[in-house]
Length: 160
Image 1 (cartoon, rainbow, N blue to C red):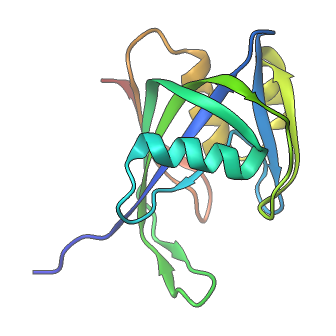
Image 2 (spheres, rainbow, N blue to C red; image 1 turned 135 degrees about the vertical axis):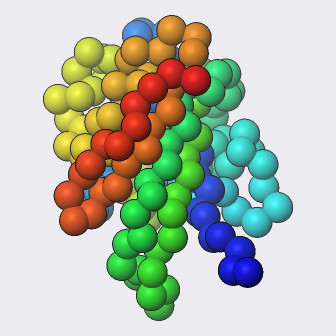
């Protein structure tokens, strides 16, 4: 039996008291809400806090889970990895606690954006779909399943 391999990732839509959310501009993926892979031995909440701090310089509190997504495609790898396996992502609503916006080696810009303007900046179909789940959040978690290559294909989009 071959054990399945999944990458686990966590991200956060950070809200401030001006009805704005945090976006970071990645070098290869455009504008996104920050997040990334959960490291070995790390829990999801700590991963969100760490990723947002690394990518933007700010401190946050993780509040609510709003979406779970599966990218079921197996994609071409990078950095010596031949194939990138299926990815499972958990997206959280977060509250800004403090700090000053900064950039990192993963992104060239970070900024606060009005919630209703964020989709004008986000171009990745998968990130757009996940951000729409945030905008539609009604207390129920959204489940998304999709593939991103060769083209984006949303296979499941439902509340759970």
